[in-house]
Length: 235
Image 1 (cartoon, helix red, strand yellow):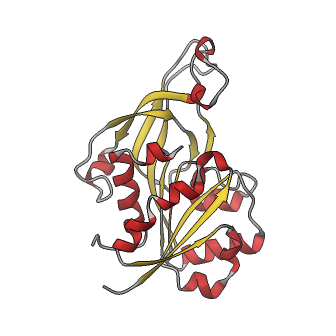
Image 2 (cartoon, rainbow, N blue to C red):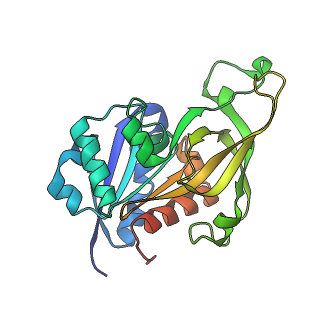
C-alpha cells in the first residue's frame, strides 16, 4: 500500500475534547495506510509545501480564528485535491468570522435547542436531547452510509445553516415546542459531502464528546467519510 499523508489539526474550545476526540481516529488512519502528522494550530495551513503533500486534513478546531494566509492555504489545498473531513463544531463551528471558510465548508452551526426550561440544571446536559439522524435517499445509496439505517442519539442536536452545493446524506429535524419561538419543524443537514475544485469535503454534525464519537453509527460514518474525502479504499 502506498503511504498517504494525513494532517490532523486540532485545538480551539476544549469543551469538544479535540485531543481525545482526534486520538480516537488516528489508529484507524494508520491502519489504512496514512502517515499521520498532528498539529495543534491551524497556522500549518499556510505551509504550501506541506499542504501539497497532504492527502487528507482532519480538523477538530472549534470557535477559533484563522489567519488570511492559513485560510488561503486551506482553500487552495482542497481546491487542488486534498480531502477535508471533520465532525461537530470542529469543522462546522470553527471560524465564525470567516465567510470564506463558511463557503468552503457549506454549513455553519447556528444553535442546539435546549430542553424545557424546567428541566435545565445549568450544565451542558441542558442541550442534550434524544433525536434521530435520518438517512436521505442519496445517503442510503452512498458508500459512506451503505448498510446503515436511521439511528437515534442523546446529545446536542445541531441546527445548521447550509447551502445546496452540499450533497446531504442524512438530516435531523427539530420539532416544534411550545417553549421555542419557531412555528414549524426545521430540518438540518446532519451528514453531508461537498465537492470543491478537485477536493472532497465531508462533515458530520454528531460528535460533541468522545462518547458520541464511539457510537457505532457515528464512528462508522466518520471513518468512511475520511476515506471518501481522501479517495482511499478501506484496508
